[in-house]
Image 1 (spheres, helix red, strand yellow):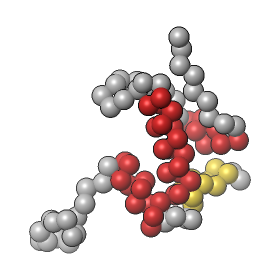
Image 2 (cartoon, rainbow, N blue to C red):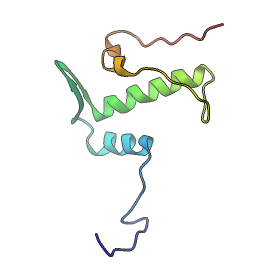
Image 3 (tube, rainbow, N blue to C red):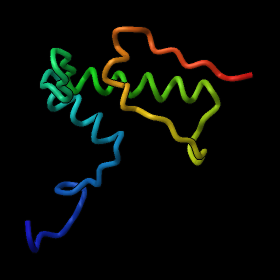
Image 4 (tube, helix red, strand yellow):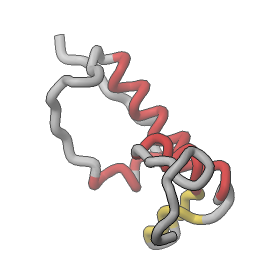
Length: 88
């Protein structure tokens, strides 16, 4: 679309959340993650990311907080209930 003027009709910048939300609508039942025999659709990926974000928010982690953790395990987590406990 070289030369086109960007406007809300033909251009919407995507954040990670808006990308996941849009993908969950447009590609609902299309695989987004495949690892061996584990397959997640875009809808399931959005649901899992939303649950993780909710768990972090319940711990008091919010926008602007600095934190780091390893998400490499995230593919295997669905076989167990994701539990995040706040240290007291």
